[in-house]
Image 1 (tube, rainbow, N blue to C red):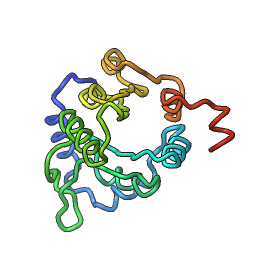
Image 2 (image 1 turned 60 degrees about the vertical axis):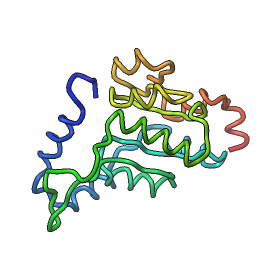
Image 3 (image 1 turned 45 degrees about the horizontal axis):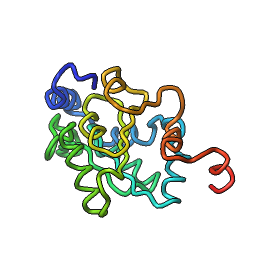
Length: 179
């Protein structure tokens, strides 16, 4: 995530460590994920004003799909782990969602939703988010690694994810009154 080693190679190494793990553990982890401060408020407000929301993650589909259900997220693209007989094999299925793929997916979603790429928002914390952050109309480093903070034009380091609302032009007085 700091950009020091190739993301795809690192991902394969992490997958291999999961070999033999019962797949039920992934759902248990998903259900106990720590939720970033401000997510509830951000999701509620963005959905209310009509935003389409996507998770483009170098993590695993188990977690992205859990969050999709919890927050009514429109799109989830993440890495799918291979399962045989209820156990993780230590391998993945399909393309790895790395930085390049995240940028491709953001373009694809913008096209499907008939939205100019300059009207998109991308938020990330790791080096693999930089391609996506760099093509979005509004790219935000969120509690990010130093390389991402140095590259992104906007950064949030001390407040919750709902701080994104300020970059979108919303004020607390409006949000508290209307939302």
